[in-house]
Structure formats: structure tokens, C-alpha cells
Length: 234
Image 1 (tube, rainbow, N blue to C red):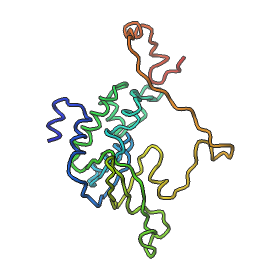
Image 2 (spheres, rainbow, N blue to C red; image 1 turned 120 degrees about the vertical axis):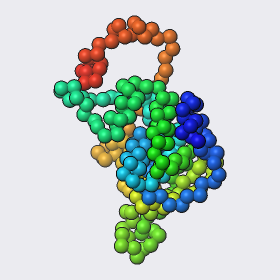
Image 3 (cartoon, rainbow, N blue to C red; image 1 turned 180 degrees about the vertical axis):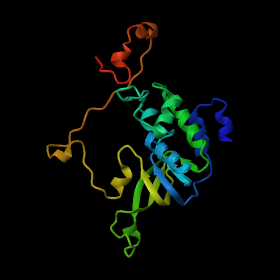
Image 4 (cartoon, one colour; image 1 turned 30 degrees about the vertical axis):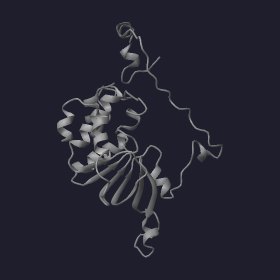
């Protein structure tokens, strides 16, 4: 049904709204659990599915894509080899070929929706955040791996307040901030805390939209050698 709707051009957010309107989440186990609907999360889920694993992809936002959709990061900073050949390969090259050098956030959301829906082994759950992580040591102190460093299950909270817990054979933390690792007790630093100076962080990048741009004039003054892939900039 969702694949048929995708062909109509309905915005991707509506597909997932329909997905979220389904009955209460009943799954309790995942072969591969990917946490984070980020580009890395989508890549991990698709790659695992293509290798034959059943995957559950859990994202915190209404759509997939992370920084490319929610933060309007609508272009790639792609490096090339001295001969102009692409450096990045794998699934990134596939995504880059589909979206191009620049794209709209809605195009990215639609593409990621199509990408995961084309893989029948991927089950998607959106608007769910990890709130607790259970390790092997916590649940079975006599287990072979009782160091507390193996994640056994993760509890999520949905936007409507419901919670659910998933056990998994393998877990991929694809959240932007390493939420699963932090909840599991992994050590982490804030900003430049590891230097011992302070916890100051780099300023955020501001993305914004402009109206009234004369694209013909802009294109006429664009210097591809300076600003294109591999260019030196201003």
C-alpha cells in the first residue's frame, strides 16, 4: 500500500503519518536494531537489510533524513581525487546519484522514505526516542559477557507517551549525539572537554531560506573552479 502511494507524489511525511497511525507497536525483538533516522541510520539499515538481516529502524523525528531534512542541510560537501574521481563510494554514492549535489529537504525526505520502503526487511518506527538501555550484565550477572558493555535491549518513548522495549541481536547507535551509548554508560566528552580546558563547543551552523533571488545573475557570477567540488573557495 505504501509503495503504491509513493508513486502518487504525496509528501513523504504523510506516508509516515499513516505508518504511525497503525495499532500499538507489538514487536519485541529485532535481529538488527538501528537507532536514529539519520543518514547514517538509513545507510546502516539498508546495508544490513541487503545483507539478509531483518532490521528495525527507530527514529525520533516524523521523517527520516536527520540533518538533511530537519536541519535543511540541502547540499553535499563532496571531495574528489586530483583526477576528479569520486572518493566516497558505497551507499553514499547511490544516495548522491539520486539526490544530486543539491536538493530540497522534502526531496531528501521522500527519497529516504522510498529507499527504506523498497527494502522489505526493514521495519520503520518514527517519533520514538531511546530513554533506557539494558546491558547484558544488568539482566544476567552470570552471562559470559558480564562487563556491562553489551546492549541487550532498549526502551523507547513514543510521542504519545507510550513506551516499548526491543531486544536485539545487534544494535547500531546512529543518533547524532550517541544517545544509546550515553544511556548505556559509555564515557563521553562535551565540546573540547577532553582537552581539560573547558566544555565550550563550536558554534552551530545557521541554515536559512531566501526569497527573491535572481538565479540567472547568480549563475552568471558562479565560479565552478573556486566553489565547485574540490574548489579552493574564496
